[in-house]
Length: 243
Image (cartoon, rainbow, N blue to C red; front, side, top):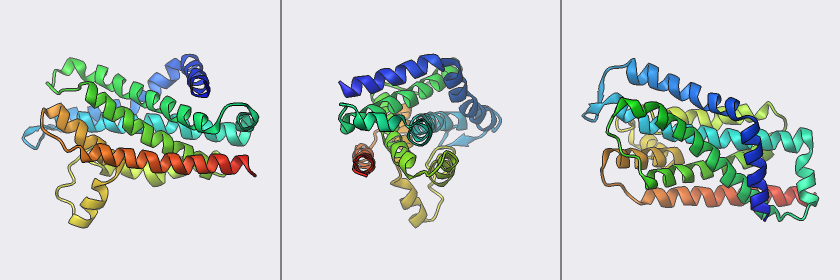
């Protein structure tokens, strides 16, 4: 019941700010597609660069949408509105609160990714996006929603959230197999970047889009990140309760 309550709260928030959320989800990815995809007429791995770029931008969009939906809102609720204190004294189990936040953030990221799919649909690229693509994108959103919960507790004030975004989100946005392949990077750096969650997501979604076989190891990596980050987030939540 607690999970449904959290999801309903996020749904009401989404309906209230529908136009703001939609425009915010569109602008940056659309600029990436226009500037890099249509502005740079080149090939990548034997295909038009735009075909390489679209899966990466969609993966990137689900990451940003999920992280921002949770990290900023939860930080404001905890530090300024003091709404989190009311959650702690309510009958809602805190683990259900955590799961509700992660699922809600995942849906927000998936919505942002779906907007980009609709924008590029008229281009007729022939890329494949099936149910499993959306599952991987949803799982990617869950990972970064859990990271958003962790960051919301680490941040000491509202200005800290963008700083953490610069530490974690921005480097992954540009390095993790989104705008360019990591094949030409030095092996150690390439291997380190390759195990990051956005790298795994971009790789799987791109292979599905090309109709190519992909390794299920990436799904395991994403679940591992989700488990670890959710466990850290739960530790912060229960630690706050016991203060």
